[in-house]
Length: 389
Ligand code: EPS
Image (tube, rainbow, N blue to C red; front, side, top):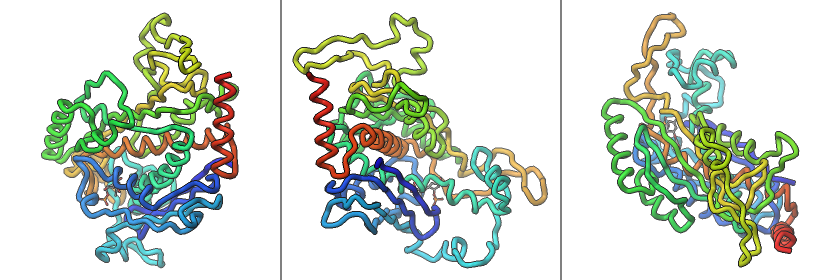
């Protein structure tokens, strides 16, 4: 059994739900392990008014007893705070039969609105946008918290940081470690470079003033990833391919890079790879550089895994200026207005960590198996000792 998960829920409905199946039994879990990850996702300069009151209160509905997993599906409900603080959305999002008084018919360019309405036969963009919303990533982060816990038992940990917002790039030569995470989370834009951080905040202020939005790039680094996850034998078992799909599934992400994937394309072969040497102290093959991003042949090498994700500027603008068409009159107009963030790039780092954790947890289970956490750890330790031999 390997982990799989399914999320349900709309951005302005009552709650989000996630069911995570396939975790080994006996894994210690506290509600605070999940709540702390959800709190990290709410961080970030440039988020909209929603994050000021969103609390992400959770209920552990199933699969956990006396502080550890049972091996049965774990179900987690995350309240949408807005539903409980006012009745603003109760009619608009009611599951009972009815009709909205205010259909949204001026789709936002770059959003799922228009194609979603065409594909599903809706005449109100809200039928699409409520689920297309990045609010759904809260449910993924709850699942990812469990994946991170599982990975921690085989020595893996995951960090992320923002390396670009708008056209401002950070200038960090080295990879952040888990010890740096507190400092990164303390940064208003989750950037590790203080000079770039100040310029990123200025860029967000300037875009906010214009009613505009900004995209950017985050880097996710997984340390201590067991060697041997993924496989070279089939296209759909390559770890790079699985990571790319998972990262590209995040709302508004339009590009993914493993290691220095984009820049090595312009190098010569003699400089583009990571030389291999033998380290007698740890009795392991090591690579001093990390251009390949910790994978070779679709398999994790045991070196830091490096994944970058590029997010486009959010399609919802506080001052909509891009041309669109009113779907009723077919006249040229600007899109309807929805409450929004100026940028969600700081939160993207935490969601990126989540998706990397979920992929690695699945592949670690595929490699090591085990119905109980003890069996999983035993099998991983046994594989590591065969390598050292
Ligand atoms: C989002 C729009 C905003 C964000 C939301 C994602 O929501 P609202 O329209 O309610 O202000 O705050 O993100 C979250 C609610 C969240 O928890 O991340 C969108 O359109 O994608």
